[in-house]
Image 1: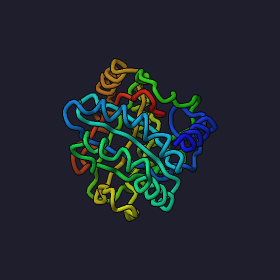
Image 2 (image 1 turned 90 degrees about the vertical axis):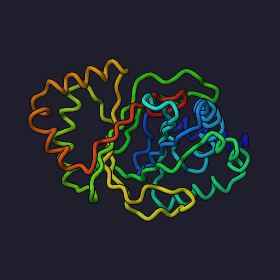
Image 3 (image 1 turned 120 degrees about the vertical axis):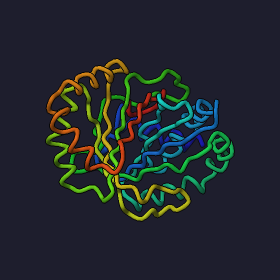
Length: 265
């Protein structure tokens, strides 16, 4: 176990990231995972996860990008991990979930979970839209203070597979509006329609989503963003209705507090 942790610590130190993965080719496949914990068990899962399940996954080539408390749901544990491609994902998940460390802690983790099947399999929406490098390393095991900032993930659901044209128009029309109002967009993703090659972990294979993830300094900054958007006639009178008419249902908006050892914050 000490060798696994040492190897993973070296990987993290070399990557020297504070947000998304430093290697721009390492995360062409992303999992956005939303778990429901039993009442009172979310912090138990955070403690276990941040002690046992970060370095052990990264030693196998998985990038554990972020862990978050959903501020709108006291039972929801949200996290993001990445892989270089689907073949690497299959191998890494096989190695982890059939490995000794997961077998040791599996019962403890599962005892906190009511549901862990809400998983979106994603890929970057286009060149340069995945997570980009940042500046500092992950806090060490035992860190407890939540990371600063607020992460907001907005999920647009479509009835059909998301078109490249939507991704382009989002980048040229909507993203500038959101950023001028105060959002810092750190990633844009669409459903990866590849077959799930690790069937032991279900994903929402029928989902057709576009996900954009933004950073704000705090909740007050996010509230100011909403005020500015409501006052922007381009959004209110020109862009809002055309966007919502294209969606299969109302967007999911995840208001997320980064945990102590989250790389994304």
